[in-house]
Amino acid sequence: MALTSRPRGTNDIIPGEIELWHELEGKIRQVCHAYGYHELRTPIFEHTELFQRGIGDTTDIVEKEMYTFVDRGERSITLRPEGTAPLVRAYIENNLGSGALPVKLYYYGPMFRYERPQAGRYRQFTQFGFEALGSSDPLLDVEAIALPIDLYKSCGLSGFQVELNSIGCAECRSVYRKELTAHFEPHADNLCRSCQGRLHRNPLRLLDCKVESCQVIAKDAPKITEYLCPDCADHFSQVQKYLDTLGISYVLNPRLVRGLDYYTRTVFEVTSSELGSQNAIGAGGRYDGLVQELGGKETPAVGFAVGVDRLLLALKNQGKLQLSPSGPALYLVHFGGETKHKAAELAQGLRGRGLWIELDYADRSIKAQMKAANRLNSQYVLIIGEDELAKNQAVLRNMGDGQEESVALDELEQLITIVGACGK
Ligand code: AMP
Image 1 (tube, protein in one colour):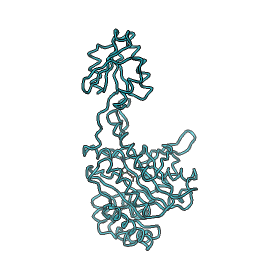
Image 2 (cartoon, rainbow, N blue to C red):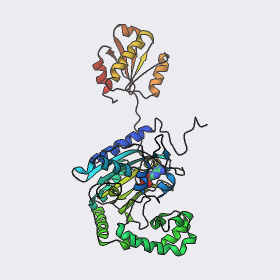
Image 3 (cartoon, rainbow, N blue to C red):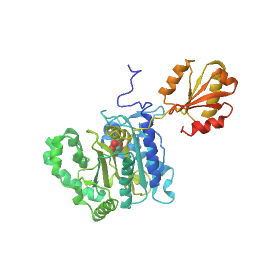
Image 4 (spheres, helix red, strand yellow):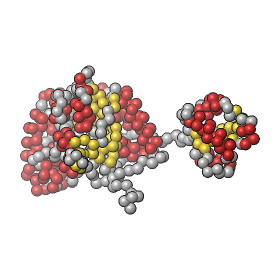
């Protein structure tokens, strides 16, 4: 059993599906290019402390979801549960902030969280995220929303919604936290166990608890936006003005606080109507204190992370991102012996030019080989018969229209011109 089943909450991406991933990855690279973001690759595992400090000790991720182990050198290591803290660590370590600011970076790869698996929620999942470091311009907050929207649109996704909030800075939050604790305290007995634990440590998290009894109490809680200091209020109003200028629609959600401690000011989440309970396809926000928290200079920053698995799920549910069927450029049909050697030699030459070439490895009948070429959706078939080979000739058949022509086998360029024109 253990040998033939993958660990719970993980997925195999098999041929037939991987092409969709490749297509999406191409779109991700395109949209990052358009906004001037460059890829940064960090290790899959980091020192555990990075996430404890970076994400926050009282968050679900750090409290219960990390894959942490002690390595043979007695170091505590954690498989990365998210990409921002590692990216910021790499930004500081490689001194990437020494030139012109802002620095725009993106990451793409697997993340690991010990969560209860269900549709759209896995223990290994893929995130694409991007971060702009070194500027507090509200326009960058808005671009952090515009970029994923461009990506969703380029994939053909519809039915998504942007939710927006500001959770202020440390200053406005300290006043708000007191008000919030005072609101929840009289109801402490009716809160779920997690919220009871968080009431004094991290009361903001009580606002986005999914348990119904907690939601009822949270409904009348004071709103953070009423406690914003003048600077944070001005920043938030500028964000909304830029969103209007760019024609990006959004809804204000005063209960949106996000599960990671590092956020300041603007937070946002994009949800899809195509998904069930796990409907968030991306989320992000500003985190002006994180670089300093992790040992760097004071550096404002803003970013966003897209759940790639969920985005693909939403696209599948909408019947979008369908691939045009692809197949080999050429299938070489041979009669064994010398003709197979010729086929092997031709395949070698054509593959060297980047063309997808297939041939028979089982010395099957011509009929079976033609069938195989058809099944693979091959664009051309080259039939190398013994008599033709003696004359250095072969018959090239266009599988689309059935037209046949004789080609010279020592004229590789001629073959490439015809076959290569149909794509790779
Ligand atoms: P977060 O890092 O929690 O802000 O998540 C950002 C995005 O990653 C979410 O909006 C989801 O689309 C995706 N995501 C987070 N956790 C998971 C998971 N366990 N499985 C699949 N996707 C996830």
